[in-house]
Amino acid sequence: MDKLSFKSESLDYQTVEKHKYPKWVRILFTGIFFIFISVVPSFVINDLPYHFALSQKITNANECFCDKNYNKALKLYSDILEKHPTFKQGRIQSAKCCFALCYDSSYFFKKGMSLLSTEKYSKEEVIEMSEYLPKQYRKYFISLFNF
Image (tube, rainbow, N blue to C red; front, top):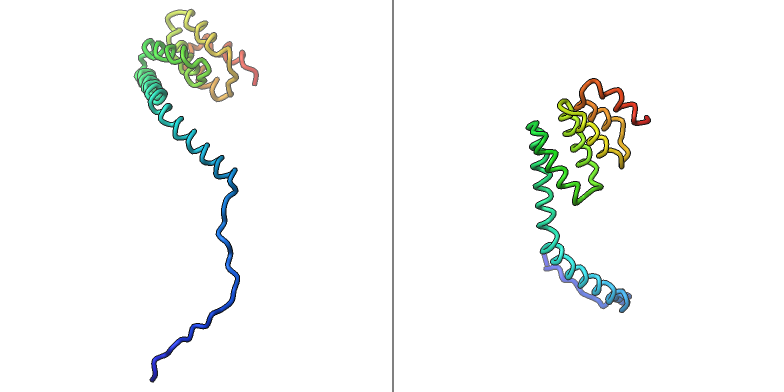
């Protein structure tokens, strides 16, 4: 048997030209790239440590709450809410701490209610918060929220 030989013939066919982005698109994406490169280090240097510290404070507050150290948890949540007054979960946890402490004084019930006055809460959240209240406050507390 002979070796097979292939003859290559020049085939005429059209080739597709290499795509080039318009100049304005290249300038736009180059600008976005440089803005991104300038903002990310600023965030990492300035803001990231703050967010880590805040996260650590929230973790400590949650641990105190789970350990039923409500006074310390309330202080930590209050510190967090001073810097982030719209932090809804912090408001809920602060109110739970106050409600758990209102066995001693009605002052904590009023304080807990003042923490909850700025947000809307779901039925599940209200029921969960009411579990920390003494029985004499529960019906009144649940009746304040319209479901």
